[in-house]
Each structure stands twice: as C-alpha cells, then as structure tokens.
Amino acid sequence: MSRKFTLRDKFNYAFDTMMSRGTAGLIIWLGVLTAILIILFSILIISTGTAPNDEGFPTLLWMSLMRTMDPGTIGGDDGSPGFLLSMLIITFSGIFIFSAFIGILTTGLEGKLEALRKGKSRVVETEHTVILGWSEQVFTIVSELALANENQKNPCVAIMADMDKVEMEDAIKEKVKSTGNTKIVCRTGNPIEPSDLERMSLHTSKSIIILSPDNNNPDPEVIKIMLAITNRTGEREKPLHMVALLTNPDNVHAARIVGGDQAEIVLAGDVIARMAAQTCLQSGLSVVYQELLDYGGDEIYFHHEPELSGKTFANAMQMYETSSVIGLQKKGGAAVLNPPMNTLIEEDDRIIVISEDDDTVVLSGITDLEIQHDLICHYEEEEGGPTRIIILGWNWRAPIIIRELSNYLKPGSYLRLLADEAICQPVLPSGLENLQVEYVPGKTIDRNVLEKLSIEEYDHILILSYSDCMEPQEADSNTLMTLLHIRDIAGRLGKKFSLITEMRDIRNRNLAEITGADDYIVSDQLLSLLLTQISETKELSAVFWDLFDPEGSEIYLKPVSRYVQPGKPVNFYTVLESASQLSELAFGYRITAQRNDSDSAYGIVVNPVKSESIVFKKDDMVIVLAED
Image 1 (cartoon, rainbow, N blue to C red):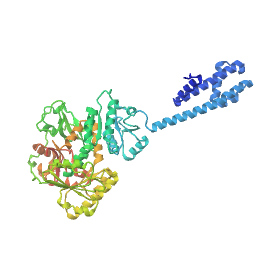
Image 2 (image 1 turned 120 degrees about the vertical axis):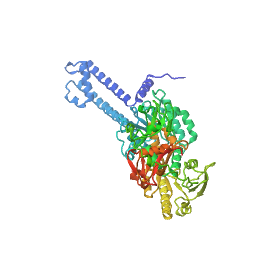
Image 3 (image 1 turned 90 degrees about the vertical axis):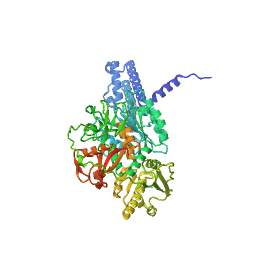
C-alpha cells in the first residue's frame, strides 16, 4: 500500500532541491527567510500598536531591514518595551542570517576561483590554434607558434590536457623563453569529452593540433579525439583543419576515415625514419630540414604572383633576389617540387618559395643577372660502389630507417647493427633488395665492443637512441657515451666518416657538439616543428611528404664542382643557372670548413642573396632539389 506524500515530505523535497543548486540556492533561501522575518515583525508591531511615533508599515519594513543588516542601528532606538524587544529579535536574527550570507559568498567565491584555477571556463577566442594533449612537444610547438604569430594581431594558443592548469602554465613559463605577443591559454579537461571540447571554441579556431599521448598504444586515443572533434564541429562555417600525430601506419586508414579532408595525418615513425636515412647518407641535411621547419630563419610559403603568368618556371626562379622558388601548384592540382624548367605558369597558379616571411616574397625587378657563363661547369664525380653502414642502438623506428636506407643504397651495400640485448630486442626487417643486414649483440657503451667493430671499414655511422626503454635524459646520456668512444676511436685511427646521432632532448645537442659529431637528429623536436608548420599551412603536408619520399625530388648536398668552378668569385644566379641545366634546383650551399661551427649554422646557408658573390672551395657543397 503506497503512502501519500505529506506536506512535510514535499517541503523537505523542495528545500533539498533548492539547496542542491549551490551558492545561488542558499542565497535565495536566506533572502526569503529575511523577507519573511521583516514582514512578520513589521505586521506584529503594527497590530500591537507598539510602533514609535505611529510609524507606517513601509517605514517599519525599512527599519527592520536596517537592523537586520547592521546590529549597531538598534543602539539609537526609542519606544515601548514591545517595540525594543521586536527590534532586538530582528537584530539577532540578522546577525545569524548575514553571517551565513557572508560565509556562503566566501565559499562560492573560493569555489569559483578554484574552478578558474583548474581551467574550467570557456575560451572566447577566434582564429586561435588549439592544442589537445600534453607532451614534451608542447614547448617547441608553443615557441614556434609564437614566432610565426609575431606579425599577427592578438594571436592565441589554447591548450587542453588532463592535468592541472597551473602546472601547465608554470611548465610553459619555465621551458619557453618568450611567447611574444601570443596569448597562451591553458584549460584542464579530457579532449574526448564533448563538454570539455565545447569550452575550447573549436568552431572559431584556425587549426587544431592533436598530440600523441605518452603510452604504449597512443593511436586509438588520438583517433577518438578526432572523432569527438568532428562530432562537435558539424555546424562550422568553414572546413576544419586538424593535424594529428600517429605512430602506427596500420592506424592511418582509420584516422583518414574519421578526419577525411579536414585532417592531416603525420606518421611519426615514417617521418623521422626518412629524415634519419637521408641524413645518414648526407651530413648536414638535418640542418637544412631544421632551417625549413622552424620559424627562426627561412620557411616554405605558397605565393600567388600575377606577373608570373605566361612565364616559364625557369624564368620565375630568376625573378626573386631574396626568395628561392622551389615548386609550383597548378590551380586545383597538387604541389610539385622541381617541375620541368619549361613548365608554363598560368594566371591562377601558385609558386612554392623559400623566404624569410610571407611578406618578403617580392619580385626583385633585376634585369641583368650577371650570370658568369664562363664559370659554369658540370664535372661529374665517379659513382661509388656499395655503401657500408653501422647502426649503434635500437628503437621502434630502426626497422623503418633500415628499409629507407635500402631505397637509397646501391645493391651489395652492407649494414651492421650493434644493440644491447639487455635493453632491447631488435627485430630486423626482411626482404631488403639492396642491403645486407647483420645483427651483433653487445653493449654500445662498451669500449672493447666498439673497438672490435673495425669502424675504419665503414662509410657512415648512425647512433640511435634507446628511446623505447629509457627516459629521454637517460637515453641521451647513453648516446653521448657511445658518441665519445666512437669519436675517440676514429681520431686514433685517423679515419673520416659521417657520424649521425639521434637525440631526444634538444638541450643535449650542445653537449654532443663537444664530441665533434657531424650531424644530429632531435626526433621529438623535428616532429614538433613539422606539426607546427602544417597547422599554419595545410598544403605544406604534401610538400614535406614529397621531400621525405625517395620517389620524385629530394634534397641533396652535391659537390660545388658539379656546378661552378671553385676558387673564383661567383654569384648564386650562376649556380642557379648551372643547376637548372641539369634539371636540378639550387637553393643553398654548405661551407665545409664551418661544418662544426654552430654559430655559423654548421656551414649551411639556405636561400642566399643571389647577387652576392662567394668564393667556393673544392670541398664545399651546393644544396639542390633533384631526383637522384
């Protein structure tokens, strides 16, 4: 038999419902209680005739309210004992009510400040960059975005991660030297939660960067974040621009299904592996990539120039003094690096250029390029035979690096892998066409083991970080120990070969310079730079992927004697003309004598002023885009 709700039950339920509304509910109840108290005693005083000086009802209401708010007011009261007793009761009630009111306000204010400290408020920004997730890559991305936004008005970077807002802000202040005019906004939340994503104002954002979490299987979480984003931005006026970092190539298809044309997928393993393979065979190449990827010098831009309509691509290359034209994008087509020199540029085509900034891509107006045809020469060096390589160390990118090396090497090349079985368990790739691989277990920091490798018989040495099983600092310490031993052994033998080192932390690169290593790959930093570039310009994804792909044109450092005579002053217009005769595109050079000088960018000069003369030495190199 059901029991009917009593009036008390209903009152208790209504009271509990009001209290559950928090600070607002408590203030409303206190207000109601105060009003009832004032009205009740005012009516009582009027009905008993104890009001002084025959005061009216409105006046009594006001007097009661003042005594409720200020206990000192009762000190000036005159009247009958009944009136004074009523005022005394109202005053004591007011002390209780307003003490509670102040306590509620204080608690509510503290709660609001705590919510703000936790980053629970909405981001009210437009054309801002959103970063979802947290890793060491955040600091490089924020630093680069700050540089990219120097000429923008009120730029903003909004970061959401499942960690304390104050901790994020403190970490950024500690590790990012300057954010310039860029406002950094941190919010605590789970990027998969729709309510948390809503606070980031994705519908007004310029781009969204999704970082890969630090765990053994990060890709599913990245894909879930992409799915949550697409579900929350269906009403967005213009297409969304997402950049997501994945580690497993098997997950790329699923990510593309979720993101469609709105997402650019960066496959971490492939990118770093291809950089490592190319850099291993060409010392100095990672410095070129660093220059193109960061915002500290020259970058790659897409530019539309009406005056180029009707001219050939070769003509366009010579029309810029302080910018280097490296490719062309036909209207509605894909970007093409180093197209045929006789390609005709049409009205709506865009050129791809290397320049200091997007507003520095201007026509020079120079008509006489002073090309020194008498200094152009095409001396071809004899092609070498098979290559011998040593890899010291192991991580999950090593199999991809070995496969990429096989794409660039001549048949019969040989690779010896030395890795510590106590740290890792290498699994060698199979089916390599041009490369024979031999695995030798051993400690890479053991001097005796390293001396038995006969490094004088090899052309290139690549030291990989044990990043899978060690913390970044520990892995870099292990790498530095190996590097010190290798350099000492090479110095004693008088042997010269390229020595490439993979680091996790950019700060340890300065320590590696002391050992005299030829080149460095800071994997996490390069990935961060790539994510930043693509977040700013979506089309750059295809450009960089083309550069890293062994098919088509890649970046090469070739002897200067292939283009011009060494030892004589020559301008870069002449180098450009000579390279174009070989269907190659020159956009920089390397002074080999400065290869160990960090202050001179290790001798790398990208996008030089073309009219300035330079005297090359025989061992200097020209940086070109070429098919092989």
